[in-house]
Image 1: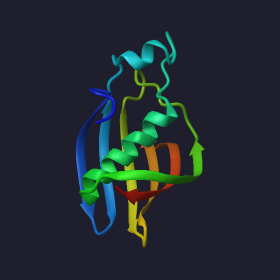
Image 2 (image 1 turned 90 degrees about the vertical axis):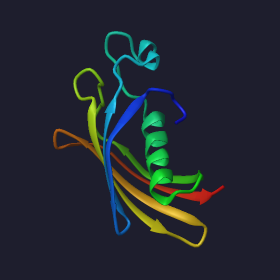
Image 3 (image 1 turned 180 degrees about the vertical axis):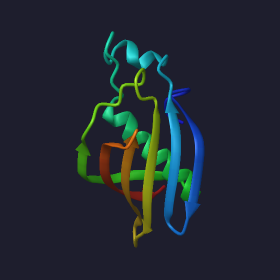
Length: 121
């Protein structure tokens, strides 16, 4: 985990290339002191890192993000209001690694849609 104690994995289920994870963002993590005081917002780069780390757990390999396409941040993830997230990962093995299509939601609100390409390191 790149950011120690930034989030907790509550569940991680994997069935035939589709993983569904539920996580809780730690609203007391020091990153929120600067992003932003009084109105915390989960940084997009942190969400991208979480997706990578979850994918690594599913495929049981260390990965490097080679490309990110179709990145759509659609709602603010405020850890004080909506710390519990569900991430759906459609994982497809490719010639060079893995392609992952992610949809992240909270309370049925889509917060993030992202497609990433990872190579194995």
